[in-house]
Length: 244
Image (cartoon, rainbow, N blue to C red; front, side):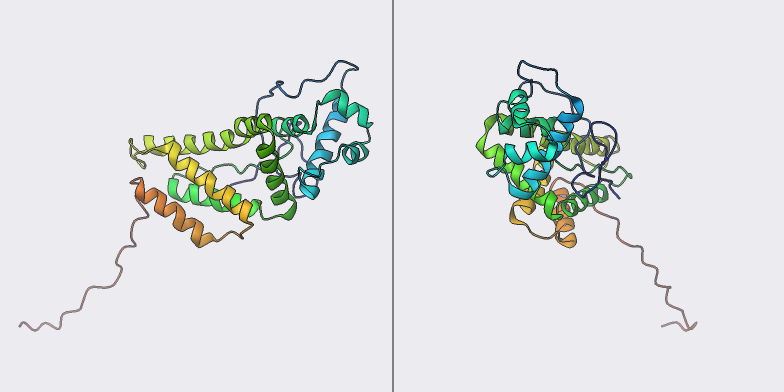
């Protein structure tokens, strides 16, 4: 089974359905998150602000994101947030970069690429059925629609990470001869990611058989062989010794 990576940027995990699923292994990008001149930032305060931002996004969405409530929940002054972040878009962007906002399901590698991708797709869809997590995803998508810089961070540090892991798994399958060398891996991966995002936006409950059928359709179109048919184990007919 795929596992949800619960490692945060500090190597630990915190309580709650959202807090247990954080994007891992991303590089820092200071283009939107550089602090304004002033006192040196407290790391504990920074983490408290990012966690409060995550909770506020999940509960109220991007449009109603309140720096007053974030400051109160984080135990810092509102002026501290304004000193460190030029606006709420920068605050959300840093949450994406640092790994505080969005879940990531590890792509398994059991040797069966079709089964692995199917397991990843179902586990990812199920991880987003939690009300807080689903709300958080929808809120960040809303933020990307409103702020081009947030959209760039979302692509660089969220969807690109997922796409890269799926491509790596499919490339491994190519080397093993399970996927044809001419298969358009990027197009296949983009479709899989689109299936996940569509499910989030429409709030549809995961349908295991439907997701498996989607993977089967994509893989068959790409020339990826399906499971071998079960062997015929019926016993041979017994002859009574008579000839025709």
